[in-house]
Image 1 (cartoon, rainbow, N blue to C red):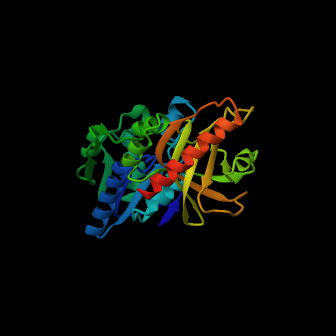
Image 2 (cartoon, helix red, strand yellow):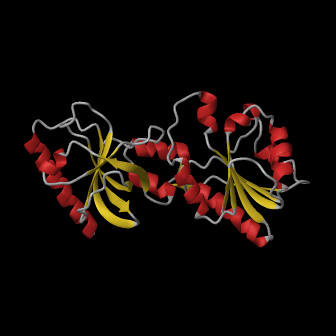
Image 3 (tube, helix red, strand yellow):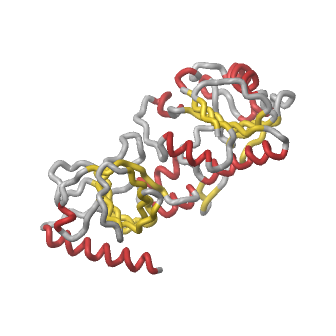
Length: 301
């Protein structure tokens, strides 16, 4: 797959448009449709996204992504797209919708098909939409992907973010069509968990990532592509950390190596309980023992 950060000429394409945060099930459906159209018609499949979210650029709010750019690229790549274009939204935010279609999409891609979600907006003041794209039927065929639902709830990045922050991690996973996960570099912690009988890997989350609900989760960790069932805690650890720094703390079952400075992928499967402030270390140890025992039972199921 070619990855480009500037426009070039890429003729005769089936073209997917969107920001694709999370590359969730509805995004996957859209991208797979684009790849399918390309293969059926002897075209290249291409995708245009942005390095920075139009929503956060236009509102000035602090970003909170489900997936960072590198992970998003990998997820899209696995869906079989030939070329992905990652543009800087700041360069295009004032461009009129018609100009964007003519000067970007048609001029550079000569698309035979353009595929978007039902609620895709583009151009200055979000005046571009599916109706406008449909009006260019002499230039390309427009394909709109209808809304997709999980338990009568719209699959969208916005809803997935809400479920992640509310601790409804299983529902978020169903909408993503995979478990929600976070990648990060392992740092040296206070090593308090080690004194309680549990070695843990500590990761500080990227400030641009969505933050899961504080508490304990069952899940998996991946180190060098090896999967380890894991007991996961995310929060400020009020019982042991006076600085109250948000930390992802992970105990990997059946792993005894040194992870400092290594990249770890942590996958959240089940939300077990919220964060608790214990009166003493003994209470904390007893709860961790209980959590660990329940994790072992969960793994056996």
